[in-house]
Every structure is written in C-alpha cells, then in structure tokens.
Length: 264
Image (cartoon, rainbow, N blue to C red; front, side, top):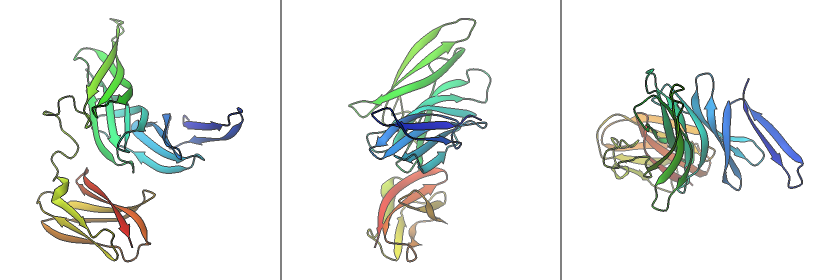
C-alpha cells in the first residue's frame, strides 16, 4: 500500500507534523510559494499522473488526476512555472510493445487544469527514455534533462538534454498545442467584470459546443453549462457569495480561455 508521505521538521530537527497521502502513490515535492506545496507523482494501479497542492500544514487544497493519450504516465517532479502554472516531467508508456517508453512533460494552470501534454523520444531504437528534471530558460523556453537507456543486451545509457519552447514544442512551426484547433481567446468575450447577477459570454466563432465552467477560489466547480453557436450566453451569479471566481471556457476537453471574475 504505497502512498505519498510528507514530514515538516523545525530548524532544530524536531518533527512538527507528518502526513501520508493515499491519493498519490509516489511523488516528488517542491514549493509553489511561501504558503503552498506541490506534490507531483502518479497513482497506482491505473498509473495516471497526479498533482496535489497543499498548504503549509499539509492540508490538501487541490487534488488532480490526469488522463494522457498514452497507456500510463508517471510524473517524477513538478514545479511552479514563471507564469504561475505547474510543469511536471517524467515517463510515459505507449500501448505498443516496441519503442514504448518516452520522456513526458505536462503543464497545468494555477488551478491544476491541464493546458498541454507532450512526449518525446531520443531515438527509434530499443531504448527506455525518461525525463528527470527541468529549468525554464531566459528566452521563455524549457530545458529538460533525462536519460535514454538501451536494452539490457546492449547495456548502454545516455544522458539526454532537450530544449522546448514555452508550449512544450521542439519545432513551434510543427507542433500541436492544446488549444491549437480551438477558437482564439479573442473569439470569446466574458463580461461585465466585476459582475453582479449575470455574467455574459459572447461567442464569435462556430464549432463544437462550448462548456462554461464557473470555479471558486478554492478550485471547486460551481456551475457547468453547455451552449453552442455564435451569440451571447449567460451564467446566473445571483445565488453566489461575493468574491473571486474563475470562468473557464472549454471546447471538448480543451481549455479555450480562463478569466478571473469578481462577483459584487
């Protein structure tokens, strides 16, 4: 029964608190800011990537499980990105039996919503390949370290370094980004902001049905409404408490735009 475990120790070496997390099987830890902790790993037995966001007392603030296009994905480490999101790297396994292990990288926004997911191979040979760590570079890109291990028959192992842009792409001209096929954010207008009883959403492009999701400051889903077609659509805010919310517009499983909304 493997599970995540976290312990906080004082400067004098005394245990202040310890906590185990059955929500995540194994994980790496990093600081999101002075008051939040990131646990990035996976859950077993279905082996899907996980992100937990904790406060300084170890209480879970956000608990996210992700489904990737591959058979399984394991995150080794996740950290806050310069724009406030969370980037995680690790290994993914394909359903085919040949050339099936790749280095994986995914990015979520500050609420834990998946923005994009990518996987890469070093070679088409018989290798086990994975990413272990990353840094963001001064030009806005992502530099990732990893390893490409040959089969036991060959016995070789290669250090692996790969440079991506901010969207996880090696070649920005030939790379599918999460919202590439979705309407541009300026095709969706959310107003007024601040709002009182009603929030209006203008859609200027046809396509698959949209879903408007209203999320409170803790990440809890408050409303989930589907609509389609060009025009103005509304969300009823009259029964909500005053405060900060987030309006997320989805098309299928893809995020089109997320906007911070103040309820007056």
